[in-house]
Image (cartoon, rainbow, N blue to C red; front, side, top):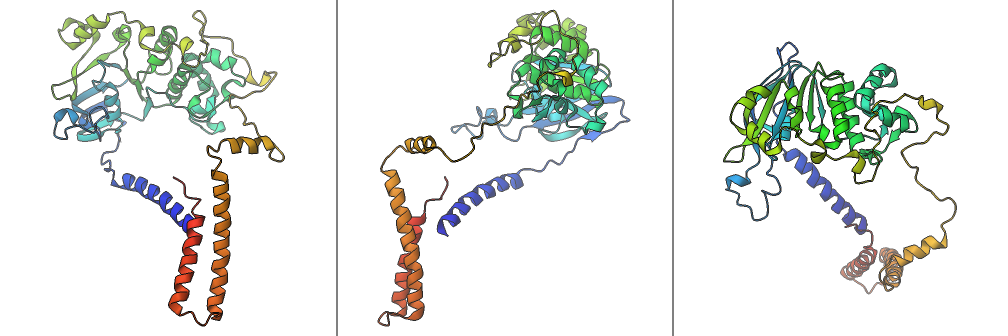
Length: 421
């Protein structure tokens, strides 16, 4: 029993620590407010703060009283974004562009004010997320098959430059992908996320630099066929981007910056012409990086990703003829079935298991402890019988208890083998 108790105690302690972290976390007092009758797509007058400082600030030797070690904050965010407008968010690295979207979505602690959306919200993260299932399930977010609008699926596939990929996949939009989409390139995962937002009917869409995961050609297709025109064209769009060459398409540009305390602010906002005519951070940003930004230098090209996956969308042909996935000669999946052996375990498996043992003294020791543990268990049961029958009248009750305790201790000591670290 002792090994099971110790093992259960160690596992229970881990579970209690996790539950304590959850229960001790600060409650989110503010929920996302939606006012469908509002004249604005997004209206915000608030300040936000991260729960904890970033690891580079909160090191082991960090001064807890230093202002630079405080959690990152966004101060005095004042936004009134008209319905159907395109707002681009720019700024240097670490100025709070992603944090702005997190604050609007209530993923950062709101220290003051409120945020009101004009409708439901779709969010495209910077790091694409996909779930295990078919491509269509990821686009429609696992809607019931009877609720899927197939025409709309086809529309967003074309708008998000996925047509050629779908035609190449074994079962088209019904092709299965594994958890986290490791069988897809980074650009394919990101385009599926954009397609998910495009398929949804949410009137507000927040996009956290999704074009950085695709090359210039595909990014241009997404911009002109999905964001500026197509499924997202009439929605309220907030686009975080490092591509300065697309800013002239924006209705409003937000320029993020930091103050002397390291807090993020919106330091400039206005149209492209207004910001270009005013001296400030936006002009500095344009002069540093150039008015014509090379998209391929700031984003990951799909043709050169870490997995060596070749570019699937040629430069001269983003769209392709759709093929019926049911007419494939051979039905395959991107999910590779696990190889499983049947029958008895081969001696090779035993040999490999034995070779994995670093010390040859360990097996005899384990066998010895098993035998001793079994012997202690047997003697413990026998002695309990002797005690109940008072087979040794010369022994007093205290001596019986001492001997039984020693045998129990030996049984416990020899049986401690199931404890997991």
